[in-house]
Image 1 (cartoon, rainbow, N blue to C red):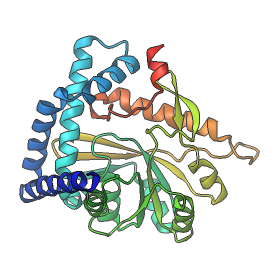
Image 2 (image 1 turned 90 degrees about the vertical axis):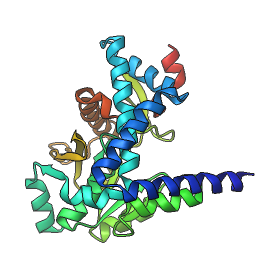
Image 3 (image 1 turned 60 degrees about the vertical axis):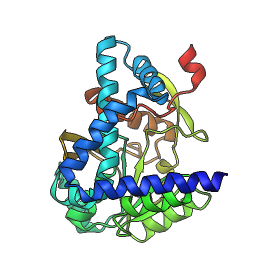
Image 4 (image 1 turned 90 degrees about the horizontal axis):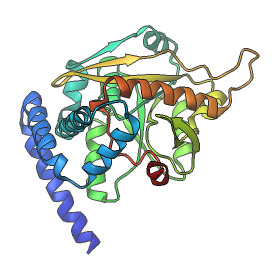
Length: 293
């Protein structure tokens, strides 16, 4: 039965992908946004998202919470509709800010780990870096359980195989080390719950956070750089590069991973507070018992 369900899910996904693909990019995004904000609030998952918004932003009014929720669904619908157009968006509709570090990195052929969050269209970051600067980048991601859907999504987010993808697995660590040794960059999203991680404050509550990239960067002298994606209007994006995170103390010793991750969570929290409607509030970022308390 699972195989049959996966097959029908994949067929539906391929049809949707094909429909959005034949549309102009701006039209596809607008239609996806309309579907998202129309259908999304009716889904059961919307209640979880609203609860996360209320808990994380208690200073906002109920009306503001609903507005953020609607904007989130609009943005998510756009993200889905934009998958067939990532190359176009990355090359022609994205602008990088604060590119001094980026130019130095390219000149020195220095592998870098770029971290971001599920903000705006997070898939655009790697697409723009590759399409505009020709940089090799490996994407880390959690592979969907449905193998047919996983194949299609991997095809889209890697720009038809132009980028490499590292799925979460037992050998993911070895693949990341190999990428660094081969002078390829790595793109990671650090705003998701990671049960095997460490508790680090995020919006005032402990959230299980993945610290594995900190010792990796320290060992291989690899910069850890924040990348913020902002949806300006429609399919226009601004990609802001921050200063590399300090990984070592003044005496040359390694900073504790927990301290580094606390700084990273603070950075991402600031991004989300500025554009809350562009973050994916659907994640189970916090323990349910914490929410109840």
